[in-house]
Amino acid sequence: MSARKFTITVPCTSSNIGPGFDVVGLSLSLYLTLKVTVDPSGSNTSPTLAYTGLGAEEAPLDAYKNLTTRTALYVLRSNGHTAFPVGVSIDVHNEVPFGRGLGSSGAAVVAGLLLGNELGQLGLGKDRLLDHALMIERHPDNVTAALMGGFVGSYLLELSPAEEERRDVPLSEVIPEYPPNASFDWGTNPPSPPKNIGHYIRFGWAPEIKVIAIIPDFQVSTASARSVLPETYSKKDLIFNLQRLAVLTTALTRSPPDEFLIYQAMQDKVHQPYRKNLIPGLNDVLASVTPKTHPGLLGICLSGAGPTILALATGGVEKIAEDVIRTFREKGGIERCDAKFLKVTEEGAQVTHE
Ligand SMILES: Nc1ncnc2c1ncn2[C@@H]1O[C@H](COP(=O)(O)OP(=O)(O)O)[C@@H](O)[C@H]1O
Ligand SMILES: N[C@@H](CCOP(=O)(O)O)C(=O)O
Figure 1 (cartoon, rainbow, N blue to C red):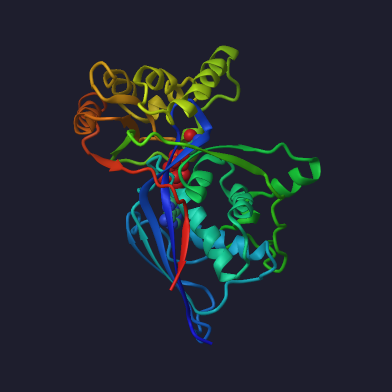
Figure 2: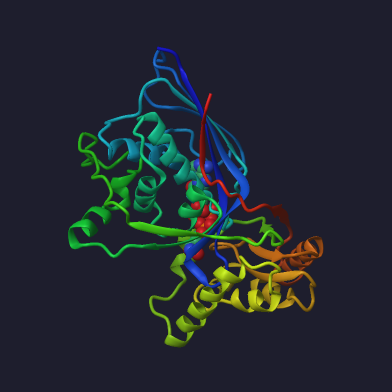
């Protein structure tokens, strides 16, 4: 049998866009790319991994430790396969910085979903793959945008008790850490996830709206940025966010974009105020870059869990980036930031066969 070759491409994502905590995500033009060969005459029983680009010094090359291949193994195991096929080799190239709020872990998971689907020739559609993604990243915003592309809103279905039980399988059983604990049973496959647990809708995106990501040179893990959030919110703060999110999703589709509407609609009281201590200078950045000080600016917020700043603008993008970088340096003591001028990607994660 001859070797199969295919390439998986997954965009990075910016979630929340101000008030849409755990709800909206935007897929953007930095990519995680996997070039995969499956050679049935090969002798390796676990995939060999080579990795270039961002995170190369951190990403495990052991297929049982790497998030992408662990996700692929979950997709395989929950769909009747017991192991990886033989003869798999994967060249990873990554442009998505780790721990910056640009959805690197969501991209790694989505790449793993497509990888598992291809390795097992399972023929699962994207909607079904989303169910698998939600067993791993339990907030839908990044993974939905990375999988589907564009500007996307999503919610999780309320489940029946039986479905809850299938969904609440601990992560350590869905994608076991390696080596797994002594009682872990590789012979028993995890249940397949309940169906249609995540629902989504694609919004439009006004073509005039440009995207700037200003990426500080340090990591904030999403887990730690979630641990600082409160368990409960005041009615006032919830209403504040709901009102803005309802306006924002349509405001970003309208041409020409309305800067007053968008700037106000990108304010947030649910996550950014609690994350400011993790990101020195955040409040100064958000307060000092406004449509008044920076003509062309539409809105500015934390990208995902941070520390990246997402600015949306119709013009003046270089000045916005320069001033965010300067404010981070002067007020936050952050010496290095990288500015990226990104495109909204329409197509989402892709597999192409050679
Ligand atoms: N391409 C990748 N391959 C393997 N692991 C990855 C990859 N990208 C991200 N990860 C894992 O995800 C972690 C970052 O996830 P997270 O804290 O959610 O930040 P973010 O998703 O905002 O970049 C990394 O430290 C790494 O463990
Ligand atoms: N809604 C999540 C999004 C996390 O995104 P990431 O890019 O930081 O992984 C949150 O804000 O916690």
